[in-house]
Length: 106
Image (cartoon, rainbow, N blue to C red; front, side, top):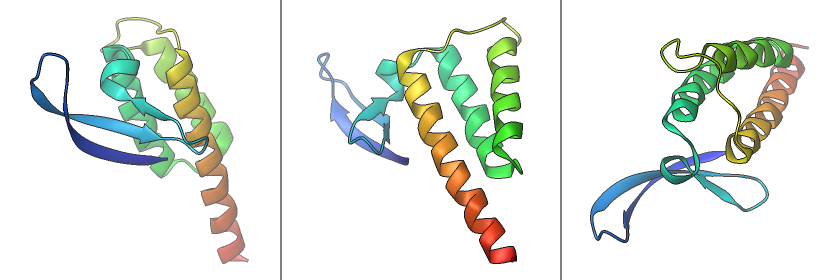
């Protein structure tokens, strides 16, 4: 997953930065258009968890906890297809990272 801020012009002709998440299947998720505010908040948490967890299982537990708490304790959020695709990519990358770390320790 690659996070790339880009300049774009929307229909309103207002310039602003978008955050695109490029996935391995050559698609991209525009966090501004494809995710709700609640999902963007949860995604921020997941990006941090991905950097610090020690296992995929721990990441999945943290993900479920974040989904149930929601945004600012607003309650559960429902995972959209776009968020599901991003999370699937994150899990794949985390597995590779953990495997690489385990190989280096051996």
